[in-house]
Image 1 (tube, rainbow, N blue to C red):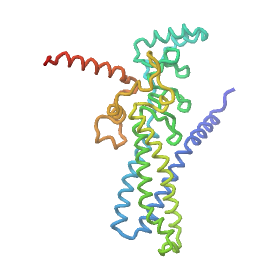
Image 2: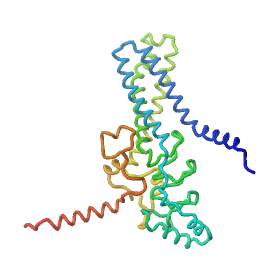
Image 3: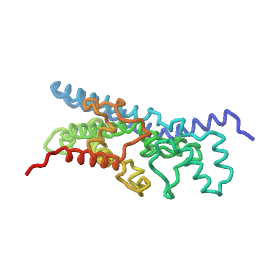
Image 4: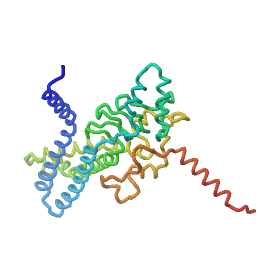
Length: 323
C-alpha cells in the first residue's frame, strides 16, 4: 500500500530540512558575526573614522566573495554521466538476466563500453558499473548515496554545503574555504587588540560595562577556532589539487590496466592547477566556471610521459652531431 502523497511530501520536506541544518548553522554564525563585527566593533568601539571605514570596506569585500563562493558551491548541481554511458533497457535486461554469471556480465559491459573513453577498472579488471543508475561509470565518477546519482569526479559529499564536492563545483569549494579562512584571520587580527585591552587592568576598558565586550571576545575566539579548521582543510585540498587527486582517490587509488596508481592523473603541479582553475589566472579568485575539460575524459600521466619521450627523441634526431 502506497503512502499518501501528503505524507511523502512531508517526509521529503523533513529530509531536506535535516540536510540543511549544517548550512543553516553556518549562516546563523555568519549573521551573528556580521552583527558583532559591524555594530559592536566598527560602529560602537572603533571611534576613528580613518580606521572604521577601511575595516568595514575590507570586511565587506571578503564577505561578498565568501558568500558568492559558498552559494555557488551549494547550488551548483553535480554533473552526472552523459546519456551514452547509460545502458539501454534491452541491454540492461540482458545484463541482469543471470546475475550469477559474472563473466557474461563482464563481456556485455566490455562490448557496450568499447567506444567509451574508459581508462579505469575494478579490482578484477572489469568495467565499473552502477546498478542503481544503470550506467557504465565514467573515469573518476562515483555513486553518491545522498545525491542518489553517479557524480563526475566526485571528491566527497560535504554536509556543510549540503552538496557533492565534484567536478562541477570543486573550484567554488576551494574558494569558499580560502575566503572563509581569510575572513576568519582578518576578523581575528582586527579584534585581538580590543580583546587584549579588555583583559588589561591598566586600561579603563576592563571596567567598562557593555555587551559589546562579550560579542567581541566571542567573535575573536570563534574566528580563531574556525581559522585552524579551515586552514587544515584548505591545505589538504590544495595538496590534492597539486597532485590532481580527489579525496576518494587518496584513500582508494584508481586502477588502470597496468594496476593501481594514485598518480595516474597527475600531470604536474601547474597543469593540475589549470585543470581546476583554468588558464586565465585573473579569473582564479572569482567563483565562475573556468575549469578545463568536460568531467568525463581526463588526460593520463602515462600519456604525458610518452608524449614527452617522443618529443625528446625527435629533438635528439634533429640535433646535428658535433665533436
